[in-house]
Image (cartoon, rainbow, N blue to C red; front, side):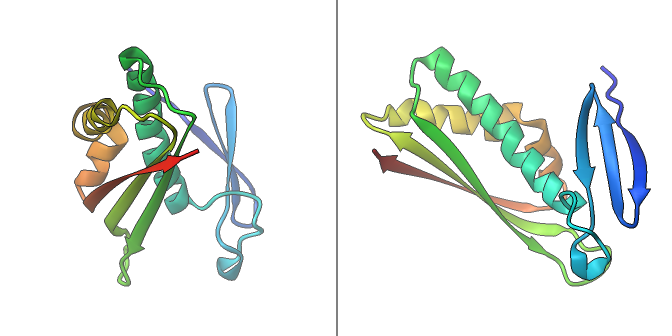
Length: 139
């Protein structure tokens, strides 16, 4: 399956990426000449990482009949100092909200996403040390 994205310059450091009729604004940080009209490319990578895993988990939990009230994923990443700067260490904190958690099924869903299904996570493993944490917040 082929994926295609087209990037168009909008002036300055602002670009629009279009793929599958969706538009994402990409921009540099203001201290690097950006206008703040979009997300930075590296932060977009972290967003993709969290989004990929979250979609797996929501789908798996539904199939396992272990739904939760909410899911939040915090991604903390260390950016190297030397060019080319990249994320060498990434921590993912999965937060599940609700009550009467089916922790065994939630753990299995996270493990399946992390170890088998999330392609973005697999790509990150090629250049980053990953750590995974799960937290349960009673509501």
